[in-house]
Structure formats: structure tokens, C-alpha cells
Image (cartoon, rainbow, N blue to C red):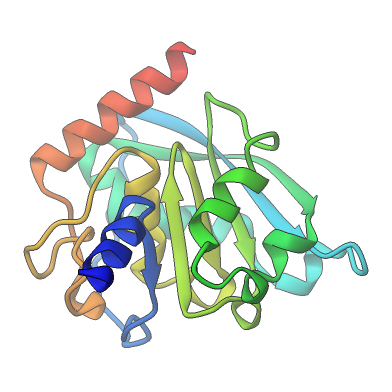
Length: 203
């Protein structure tokens, strides 16, 4: 019973473990000029107070957003548009190894003053500073460890940030089963994300 309670609490906050998302996946990229919904995306690098250099992540932000659009979102009429690139100095969030079991609540608490309600905010931290967490998503915020930015973890956590729950069907982006097989959303999930984008832009 105690184990079930722990699993239930973890599921509420949508923190996702790594499993085997390292396996390469092949998804044909599709880009569109006619999009039904477009949402700005801020990239926020989390750094400790002892070092503040976003270049240490070595990420091409434009290429990252283009990859998400081409692989997962444009085909469904949703566009992610590059917003601001910022740095958040936060020791507690940077080193989630000190927050074993409370990673999700730490993320939501430590980012509540650094995101804009009309945008999707993607926080990036070093994989070496987590405890088996690939990403966390909720309330238009997603935290993704740097090693999983180009895996299906990224659209999975963005899905959570845009209102989606886990989905049991294998191959679905929101599935927790065999992450390397994840490739698409359902029509219902797409509608939920579009509705959430409308709500965000109306704030």
C-alpha cells in the first residue's frame, strides 16, 4: 500500500525516468507554413551560483526548436516559435540529486517566478545533476536534461506542459512504455494542446 501511494504521488507531477529513450528513432520531418496554433518557447538554462555560462550546454536553440517542429508538431498544425534564451541561477534546481523523491515539486516551486504565462518555458539542466530524471512537465513548463533534448523525452514533457497525461498505448508520445517507439500524438491529444495554447495566449 505504501508503494502504491508513492507511485501515485509521483504520477501526479509527471516526472519521467530515463528507461531506454537513448535508442535512436526515425521520424520523417514535416514542416508547414499554414499553422493553426503558434506558441513562443523560452529556453532557460539552469546554472549554479558558482558558474553562469549557458555555452556549457552547447545547444543550438534554433535547431532544437526546428527539430521539434519538424518531427512532432508542424504536422498537426502546431508551431513552436523561438522566444527568449535566458539563464536561471538556482543551486537547488541545478542539483536535483539533493532532492531525491521531490524533484517535481522542487521544479515547480523553483520556477514559479521565472516563466511567462503566455509562453512555453523549457528549462535545461545537466543530466549528471539529476536522480534518474529525464524530464518533468506541468503548467506550461518543462524541464529536460541536456542528454535527452533530441529524444522523445522532449515532446513528451512538452505534452505534459500543454495539459496531456500519460497514455497507455505503445508508440504514443505520452506513453511510458518503450520510449524509443514513441512517435505521434492522438487527435484528442492534439486538440487538448491547441486548447491549452489558446488559454495561455488569452492570459
